Length: 615
Image (cartoon, rainbow, N blue to C red):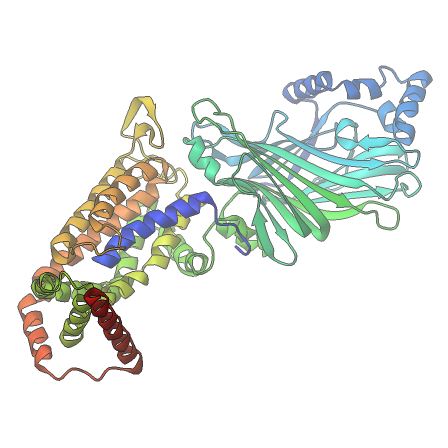
């Protein structure tokens, strides 16, 4: 994602993986569209409740259709008093096989958006919009300087000849109106949406017109804090760049030339797209989760506001709306850069996910259970990286053979750090070994590790897929509930993170005897990393996707197995020792210009050090 801020979640993950890899480096998811106009008791009651809450609406809606009431409405609303006089409560339903939308006469806006094929973690149908958690408003000023907010006005639904279409008109007269147009296609989460008008060129001022869309995101997952990390407002600006407002308590951002805005609720998104980019946009994100034990209903509150200009004196905005899963495959198929809503990582990490991990995992999950697909994916990655890892293990073996001689040098020159460094480098050069030869192969693995760290929390295909004791690989697994809450850990015990931490610790212990050296001044304490990394992973991953922990568990078990095979059947330490001794007898290789320069600098530094001691 271009221009995407590096959020705290990614930063923590990056340092976690970096810490583990530092050790490794150092040691190594067709019903025909129908439309019905109805006044269901549930929605009608909701509309009535909303009316009771809005004193402004009560004031502008006449209690009767007499001439006095109409005159009063016109006095307050000017030309739009005609619409208030014709006010009628009701709703219109549009649905297909995947999506059900209920649109209210009040505001002409969507008051319910239900995804038919998905349920929340507690088996409740997924509603992206319901119970007044969203508002869509167009604000403008009339020629007689009256302020109009469409969310408080009553539109008149218009049945079209085609059952796949519905429109709502806010009338000034029978032939003058502002219209919202909706069209839902079979099998699609994306619908056509337009704002247009007829005969308003002498009614509305062409200035200070604003479209304001807001939504308060409902909780969908077991862990509200985990879900909240991936709940955010994103937008596309200036020909393909994307950005988001951040995870803070109250974030606000502005950009120009906005093509779409998305209210992402981790695995589900509500998106507004426009064919003609908005000149600019203001985006607000408010974090509603201060305490995950108390704030359990909503995650964040979003708002997006855009200025609109009349075209030829009329409204004419062609747009789309999307209410559906945050599924990379679905979003990518629209070819509108919506795949950037899925946080796959920046730079090379995102490329690895887009062009390898996602494609290969989708292939596997097409015929394998999700858990098995994760294991097969892990095996494939380990095979792909096996040549790199083999070189890393060979380097480890060489360093182990040289350990006694390095210890001798450390003891012999314990009072002369410069000389000790020089003699150690000579030994490495003669033996054909180098600590860096083990680091470089490990560095090549970092992009894959971090790409997978981004992939699993965003993989819609593993949502509510079970494996062994985990009932949802996109969320944490639970083997025991705690009667209390532990900060940063939670109120449950997840088994996959425990097993993955144990596997990492075993791997580190296996490398201890092979490569552990005394920490050099200014270098990290490797023993500390060995113990803290598994513990940190145990806490951090307890609320994370169990699919990610399953990957790390499988990966480390395979790594341990490979190490045992290489150590016992492939690498012969005696032969390595003999080869090193043979290399030591050969004339030293001619040093390059850089190496010679470095040696000269070290020798000069040593001379200066000796002179300083004499003084």
